[in-house]
Length: 337
Length: 289
Image (cartoon, rainbow over all chains, first blue to last red; front, side, top):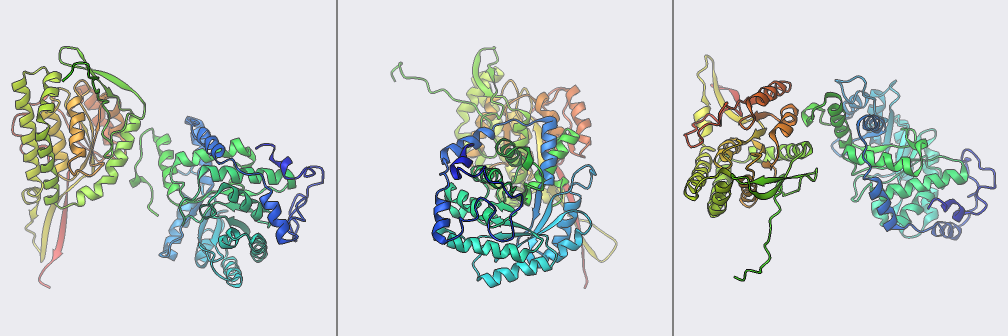
């Protein structure tokens, strides 16, 4: 799988890669793949197939790594700093978002050495509350948009949703792709929608949610990853968290390979965000091991890797308290969010 | 029956969260009878098994303490019924482990079953005996109600493997707490069988968790654990019990001290083992309005 870049395009590394994607169209050497619907389909279906059994075996082996003592302490702090602390419920209130923001700033109020999380992720209408509560902290405000989580709305509505969230103060937008169009094979529609959303985002970071649970196969996850990266997404994200299965290690492996190969051919680095279903410290550490072994330490920072999670943070804090105090902690010792 | 039948040998496991897992550590230890002859290999629980047991017990607190006292009594009585059905197996294990004659072992098992029935009867009477209305100088109804502490760690007696175990476990369950029990180290087999009884008698998974292993190894982790609300030190030797009581103070646990010598388990326990792991909730309610 390491040799995949050569399969993609024999001339990929000979041309001078542009360091950033230009405003119009995908970066070199992939400028032509979106010229037509058939060309794009030919490109996406020409991506090497994923060995599903191989991906499962690889992640299973990496999952057995034993991470202890100082390495575990580092992993926990790194994972905390990568968390996108998320609340995406119909019952969300401004008060709940404010208390979540307080938790984002000081995840463990008893311990000032505990790092803050990367971002708070809310629905677009609450982005204003979140960005106000997080002002001056360096913690990002992420908002889901484009008719999250189903994405079933017209493009005008989705773009208005994005502009509204950005206007409310969100500096990161989590969009969902049109899975219906993707599964029907209308790849160019999906692509154009992401390009339009990226434009509507302005300076805000764009995370593209593939919802791999609905894409069914790992081949589709690889195709959707490339589609999203070509369209100018800054991050590719596994799931909305509303569909099961959500983030699994094999899906994450496929996406990490995609961002690795994309950087190798274009020079552009894309972030990865697994979301949904990551609840324990052990799961988080498995993901960190997977990053290190697949794409290397370049992605081991909140700038390039995030966990979309709500309950994960409490488990990380409990493990952190266990390391600090030497005895097991309990759910009474972290806040309920 | 033909003598060339292959013996079906039993794998002794933990009872944790309603399931029968092996120890996370993969360890086992040999169990011998009273004369030192090998009987079985029991699972040797580790601190991580204790950690998992506390998680399971905590998850079970809401359902068990929230069940009506009448319902808890029915479930516990059911346990006694199923124990009665397996009395012969219990008697064999008690006789081998404690070196008793068959008749005395059977008597001990009968006493254990009777003890369980006795505690089952207490579930819906406790609040009347320990709670009530308080006379106050003001226009209020004032009630005090006993409520379970939550998760209780129990270091079971080392010598009395069934009657002693029942005498420390049943009061914890009857009062609505959930339990993580470290069984007798040298005589764990009646506890393993009791786990099978609990699993087949409507007791929700996680309400009682039985870990076969070493109290000196697991006890300190339970005593320090921030999510354990009380600890019964009956099975810990005096010196260890002192250390455990000290570390339990760090998280303000309720502690039930053991005695230097194991008590006579056949004696009437009264309320002594039900009151230690209860909290008293007092409610003031305005009247005359």
